[in-house]
Length: 423
Image (cartoon, rainbow, N blue to C red; front, side, top):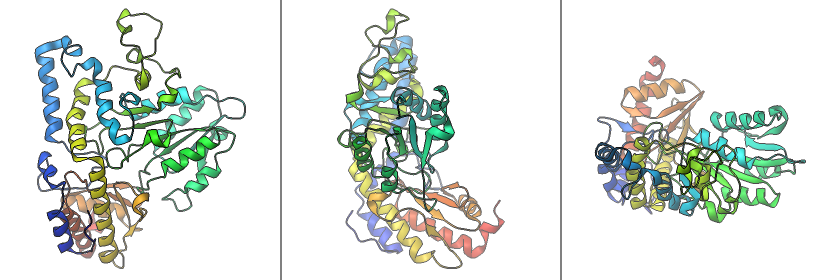
């Protein structure tokens, strides 16, 4: 979208009139009388996702157990098929992606294989702004091996509590680091890290590197293969719109396909021998060998429809609109809400190459009250203590006019003191 961004209502109208993704809005079940700005937490239900779930129910109803083996969408192959649907937007070959388990389970499954401390290389490098579940998993992997969390889990620091500096991280890639585990996009501030640069720097020092791509999958184009990333995970329920608690994905670069999985399970076994019921595990091909359990067929079925819709829209088109939407939101905040009595700040990097799909709107006082007041007015963002309101306009079903309305609500909330009366 090459229309100049201006902090006006007329700009929103122009952007909406010229939006090539506008027709996709009608393919979602929108919440009545609601401005939905929380797609980075839970995406809305598309009609395609609903249809694929209903089709799976129909298969169950008519075929029973034979649904595992019959038809183009046989459930036995669904994890690989769904993984393949997401591979293109992640810059990966289909056999390097599998739809499996949950994010935290996949972190454990991958780190169990890729974190192999030996000699001086015994430490894991993470960052102090990462989402808690990632850190819990890293600590668990250290504990399993009898390592000291205090000594062997190294945190890259943040100087401002919002963002990370890639050069600072790279300087910590010492010969004591075995594995680096980092977010693609920081969940609070929305900063997008330079994954290509970090991967080059890690590999130059003999370090394996993996990424949690939960806040970038489906909103930012990736080139995992070209960048040389060793392994990664991402969820399905945010920008991929798979539904609440939807299962996740894992990626393994093909140069690691000979590596043996450590947390093994029946569904990671070779398809040719899995029904022999042998107690000897035979690792399957590709990323599929890191599966542990049978996929939840009903829960994952929505992804057939939702990923098809995303691929139809095109990840590059989605990214272009997302950048325009977040850029417009930041321009409105700067123009209308930066000074007293509003005092809102943008905690997300301004540069397009450094931001993901949401904007961290900060307010030093009563930010939680502001968030509650927005919800009372029918605007749905989310809140991260102590002072961050995350606002995420979704490119597939959101509009620029809704962004204008959201900022108008923020202004009215402060002017009327509604944030002080909220819980």
